[in-house]
Image 1: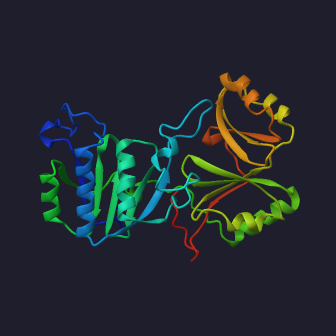
Image 2: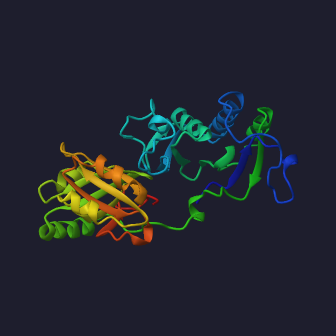
Length: 316
């Protein structure tokens, strides 16, 4: 259950909302990287202190949209440089962080630098950052003194029924756990296929790729990110020219290729990009094109890693 009390905290005066609750004032929707941003962080910290919370759990993390051909992240490292290593180790669903790190994550989200996540402390406390500097803070107590302090900071805390980002309001995604049966089925696939391609989504819009064999399965499994989403595809094709020739005339694809050093990367491309794509992957040793459209993607298997107690808590 989410926390019982939820406040929507914004810099927007309720007097400047229309009859439907839409803000019609003149304040912009960007962080000022200054005193207003600091006020948001101070208010969240005050709510956390009132709820006796000094550590929070990262939930449903993601980074800026999937890499498109020729595209660049909005901010290098999605704003996470200095908080997490370049491979984002430690930034995953269920990871515990200090309140100080959690506040820096909120700062990144307020600035729209690319990374996002929910932050929770059991049923006691939760923070969701939405669009346009809308922040939702859930608490297991009413915190009237903190509400008053938030107003003193120049912000407007308004009680609401629930955060629109609350997990219980979302449609369930992947419900299959990568349990013992999943790994048994995967071993059976490898016995017949010899090699398959494993996509490991450690955060939304980012993936690590592994060519699985019976020989390396246990080692790859041991290194997977907790609560990762695992999707199994047919193996890469060593005939890269054939993969390029079979690309659809229209639409978008996710092109996965293996470099000569064994690293595997992916990029999204439209039909207009195919000529440049062919140049980009000229040195690839194997490749596979996956449809970019959800209803056209048909993996061999898909499941999320459960926790050590066997319970599936990841939200995908």
